[in-house]
Length: 404
Image 1: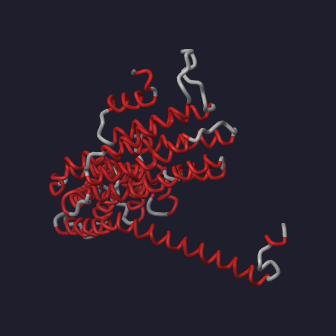
Image 2: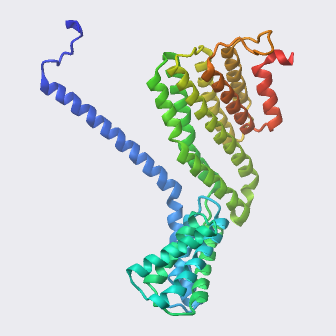
Image 3: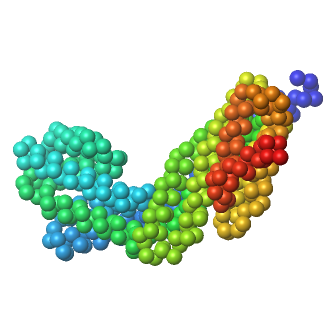
């Protein structure tokens, strides 16, 4: 290294240590800020569930104690809290699964415990058998959990007495109904607010990852492209949570009288978010193929990163239009302009029908172009177009000569 390029603190170990400590401290502060923002977001999103769970548990215990004559109504509040915890999904389906799980746990526990008594190995055997029965019935996670949990309660908290299955089942059924009533009638979630809070940590990182991917493609930066692909892959669990939130929001406006007036607006909002969600899956395919294109040293025309940047901008524009329920004309124009850029990146139409383009892209680039059109099609549907119109617009923009 030339002398003029040597760092000024090269001969001072204490200065280098101070600089390293400063960078470490800055990184720690950034991680702490990110952690606090994440926790604040989770509190805003799930804080209402704590209120719902507390109300449901109190009501279930009160009903079981006062009206069912149960001096220790354990299953009622337990089941009620389980129903509330299933709010980010289909509550009716989860309620049925939970009640079936209670029945299985009660049946297995009450059948075996009078013969074997209470103990460690007896508890393990009862839980194993209850879950095996639930698996044979093709039960989901809620059914398996509730069957095993109820079997544990029967094996450890109750004396081995016969003929208590029906009273216990009534206790659990009351708890399930109370949890359902609290979640859907007394303290229902705000559908659009919930969906919006679930969509924010999906859309914003996806847009950032697309811009980073475009920058990496311009520089043929393999590490940058891989980081962008990794960021999009990390959105998988958030997309699952978003899908569950959409289901929960639709169920609330269908069943909760306090939210019936939101049915039309939520229908438009959830349809748009679902199509944007599908578009992001295609974006992950785009990033995967273009990362491979960089690795294989395939040609990457300048129109391709420009198209990705424009697609990311269109997602933000479309989100603003959906939130305000405005006509998304600008977003559609941006989407179609991005499709046109991808068409230019592919190359001009060739005279030989067996080779539709004089390819400017390699193998992975051509696959990415197809994924790009799929993503654009889903975004156009998110903007309110039907499937046929969206397909026609994408095809006309991608291959204008075919429509002349």
